[in-house]
Amino acid sequence: MIPVVAQDYRTGEVLMLAYMNEEALKATLSTGIVHYWSRSRRKLWKKGESSGHLQLLKEVLVDCDGDTLLVKVEQRGGACHTGYRSCFYRTINGKITQKRLFDPDEVY
Image (cartoon, rainbow, N blue to C red):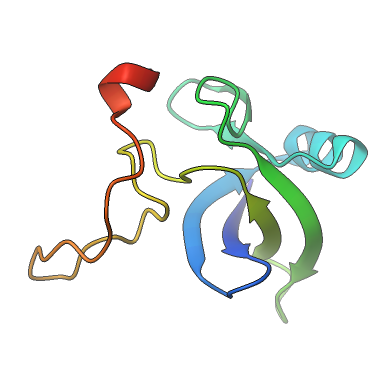
């Protein structure tokens, strides 16, 4: 299991943090659509399989220690299950910094 940071390949915006196992990495590399390992559901998860908000793979980078991946993606729709483009949509003080792109109750 390895942590993966997803980043918009055009803007550099950090979209989310998730995890991959070997199966998720192989699926990502073979399909060009980012897959993760869902720790809560304990299964392979194609990003956007429910919402349609896919992440199209552009590049995979490995950090200097070889223990974290950075995936540069083309994000289709919101990356966050709460309806925002990025999972990092609020400050530590709770201020919302983005507009919600979709209503999660309508999508999930």
